Length: 124
Image (cartoon, rainbow, N blue to C red; front, top):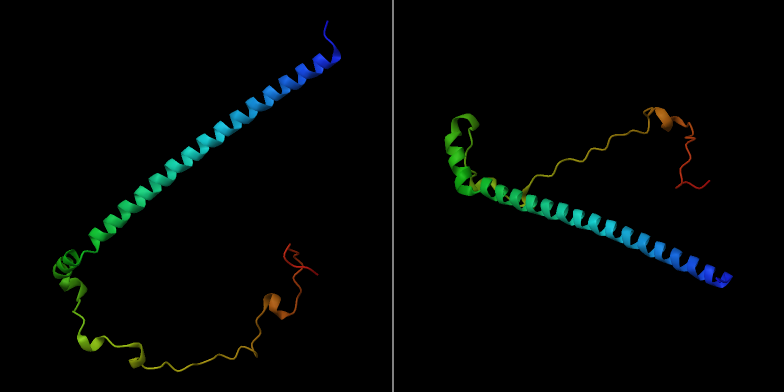
């Protein structure tokens, strides 16, 4: 009735169908994961746009001017004078001081002890 070759072909066909079903199922689950991530990204982008709009609203010069007038007594803010704005070459140079650390004891691993921790990035 059935020969051995028929049985082998039926087994191969069934295993191929099972493999195809499994691959399709995995692809669909990955596709749903990608769609979920795209939704999250879209939500975060919308949140960033909203925060940028809020920042733009909060930093409007007219609003800041009104707030400085309201809280002038508490903040004691004064307008910037033209003589206060200078270029980089007009700033005085700060003297350079270098601390001598060669005579100090640093302690810890710097005292000459060897670090015995082996990492993948160190080849001995």
